[in-house]
Length: 219
Image 1 (cartoon, helix red, strand yellow):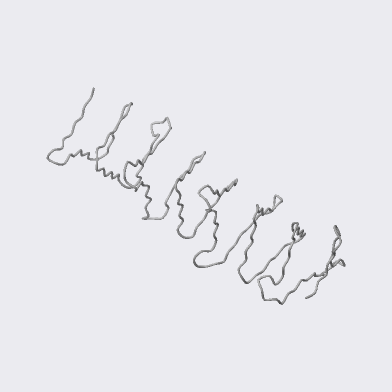
Image 2: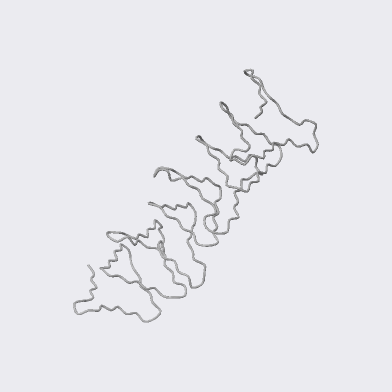
């Protein structure tokens, strides 16, 4: 074992190639352990300043472990940060921040674009999606359905609410098909304005069952 040490307090050790051109400062180790090259700052930090591109190439698993805040920053109005994985099966990219129910993942963006080639799943105890401009949820595949439901049972409510003031504040359009509403319990329509039911074809109101009836009441 060998060493190069500077033992004076506040004194530095500089190792450099200062001639310019295609020079290389190379640290090489033939060690086979996980610390084959070991850099330790036992009382201070690590400052790496690079003027050009930085490339780190590895063939094994990598771990970056910090007990404090970690910041990855790309400065400049033409700079960006990319994290790319070429894994082709199973878990390819994992963000794990669930050490506690109060742990938060926060993404601030001018524009956020999420794309998935396959299925996309969003699960949470409470989920809120809010937009300040016109928004939509669409299924664009032919013959494919969109289901919105509350499936837990009990006194659940599926609520469609609109604060719009127009005659179509809630607008349901079946542009090429019909409307099928299956209701197991009582149905109540309560309105405070005039109502119009306009049909271009046959209209049937049917109450089935020996104890059922139809009542139309005006006060």
